[in-house]
Image (cartoon, rainbow over all chains, first blue to last red; front, side, top):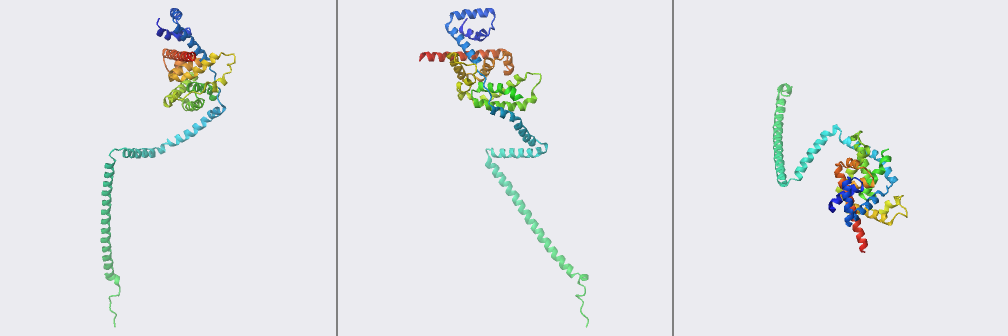
Length: 170
Length: 167
């Protein structure tokens, strides 16, 4: 048996988990290999040390904190329940879409082209608004003229003039 | 109820694994927080202690991978363990005390999975079947990890012994 195989069988040997045949092979190897015998003894020592590690007591402060945890969790659940309410879902969706658009804009390598395109669209929109405003002004002006004409016509309409045109009889 | 019954078990597992008292306190709180969140998922037909220790083991190994505790040194052995050791007495051999200290410090040289297997088997004295359930591994893998861990510790003890004799 080589030392490598012996190392594989060390734990089962210490825990008495080998067949009689395997145990005899290990025993024979131990008698002939000083290095493996030392390793076996050190492994026993390591196991004994580990087995005698004491249990450490938990501090009272930690115990108190552990008792407070369910309360903390209730608060946490209140926040998550509030955020996950169905009535907030459309708002959350809108915010998500907005954030996606913003991130698309913020992380786009060709951001200047987007800026330019936005500016162009803005200018087109602005000129359209200007045109509409000018048209509205001209309509107002025309309506104003019509109004004056109508007023003059009404003033000149006979039934409304009464006796103004009649000459006083002398 | 849960705190009384399991805080010591979880805290000791965290302390033996992390080697730092403060770290172990934080980890214990995290594990209990997770326990409260996932208790609804517990299958009542299963062993609760094994289920809790699986939760603890997963959390400890995840945190270990994230924060790399191995870069930090462990607490001095004398700091908490020696004072807690009611069995230790002046008659206890200096060699055993010394080897306890070396083994405690040598834990940092073991990988997280091997360290966990050694803690569960040799410190906490669990059966291989229980460890396999906690670690969600085949029985053969657990036995092989325990053997590898013990071998590594024995070799570290050997090195320290040689260093001491060389001086």
